[in-house]
Length: 177
Image (cartoon, rainbow, N blue to C red; front, side):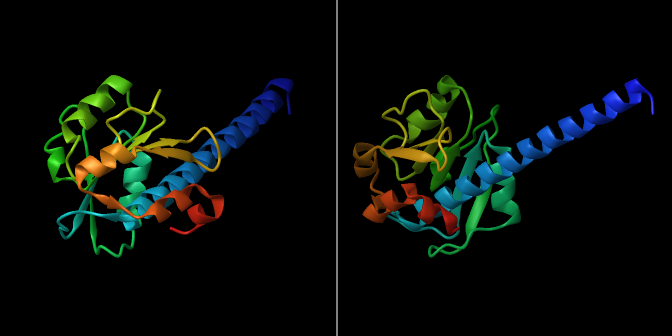
């Protein structure tokens, strides 16, 4: 085996390891997000319950795919998953939950601002700063993920959150989907 061939083999092994690790990390983050979303849904009570609950996802294809392929079990019954396009958000008033992934702050604000005061649980991933327009701000920089809750916004929406939602920040709570 020549030096060039050996170097190419080593590089492909190293790169495949890096890619494998990146995929594993993405899968781990997606699983953690699934658990947080499931927990938030379980601890939420909407003023008027609809069946099925509509969970809308913008800017996180892996989470959306995971929710479709492995449906969550909820005390609220069946969950319906909707993709929110970056070009056409559609009618977000129909959503009971809106998850906004890694989108620009300006775009996320355009999605979230019209929902203030409405019974839509909003979850924002890794915002630059947690604002007054999202129920939950989830930070994935730390493991396990940390989050903030905007209780004022929750109160104005009519959605009731069980205080046990705060236990989702504990590492053991995120192990149960």
